[in-house]
Length: 97
Image (tube, rainbow, N blue to C red):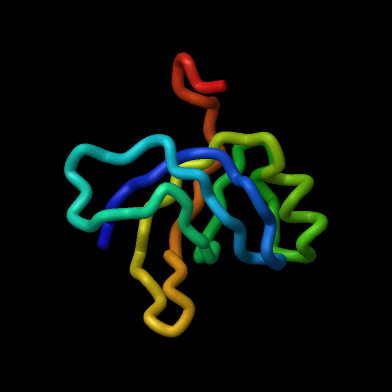
């Protein structure tokens, strides 16, 4: 897909999945996305913890809780209806609460 979405995580579902409240979309996205989407992490890039490796749900929460993330959508899993994404931890955009 190559689409881009961003927002805050509202629930951690497993050691590699979370629910994202989408507040930002790239203007050139080709697909439509709901207000919330389940995201499965294909890869994660966190500048504060560049050596982060998938471990447990608690480790994932510690790495991402309260952070703004952007997701580069790779594809939608047809079995789970979840988005498989490369996830990037970023500073929130101006005016983001």
